Length: 448
Image 1: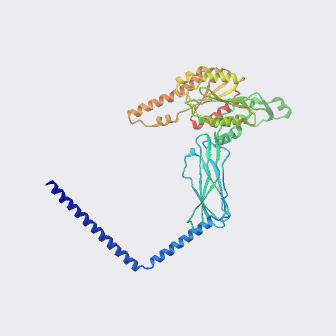
Image 2: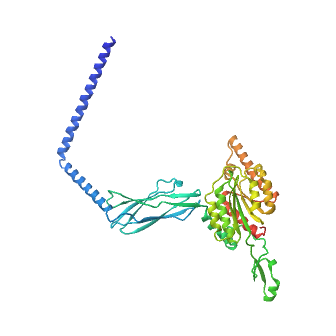
Image 3: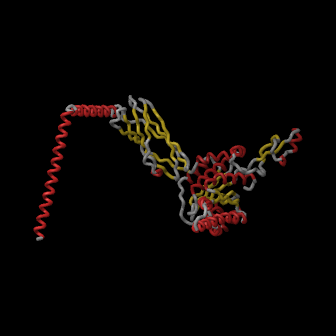
């Protein structure tokens, strides 16, 4: 019985397939008749298509001959990059392209950028008259220090026909080092001149005294300190004369950079470069010590012409060491390397009072012989949390913890001050300005 039913179902399916086949065949026959009808009505369309195809093929061949002319072997083009890039700043890269063709051509320029930028869609298009040269520029903002490798220039040329593109590969591979922000260094260099910095509104301190280094006698003007009046010169000239003093020179300025795990290294490096430049401009001697669990680099304080270059070369390729910093080793190194009183600018980042107290005795030993200024950072994320409105119990808990850490930072400052150690607590973005002001203030007060 089952066998009989199976045979009946199989026959039924075969009939269905046969019916479908004949239906599809009928549709194909009708479509063929329709095509023949159109072919009869538009009998000239086939000839027109052949003519159009021939024209297109001819134009493509002509375009190829124009672009691949035997006289043009290469495309005059070049990339002009700075000798070094400035970390965190906009750096200008210039590309020059020349059109060697005797006709107007368009060019698509693809520059192989360093892998650090992760930019794979660089494309610049330009159109140029015959035998002309054009130059365009773009900017790059590196965010890390180190070596940046540029690749080749790839340029695709097209004529007005635009059927064919010819690729030119310009061998322009080069390595450009990215140094700490020397552009920022140049901006803050103006602070080295007190009068100029007052005009710029950057210097927020007031000169409250002078050192004992005499410079010259000059006429009294309103605003001069009356304590500097030179009465003998006044009697001789029959007008008020004052002594003018200048800051002491050739003082030792050392930047001590903690490269441990708690450090915001790029901010410290950029500021070190700026403060070292200004110290050299003020005729002081600038030096550098970089440390973590060991001493990584030492640049003895000098005032030679190549000192700033030496500091830059030391700074540009340094990385954070994710380990606990050894302040005992730092103290021993300072004792061995620095044999006279110096200004020590210690870049670190104490997050808690207990972490600062672990190293306090070494900081006290440093401050006993030198003028020590500790520089550490405010946590800007905590300020964002403190400004957030409390809506849930979790928000209240998070805000309480943020207030605790913020309060502890202030406690660190007070604790250091109680032990005669000066400190600068600042948001990272204001570090350079705050520290330059501190340096100028200490020189003005004659504390160095």
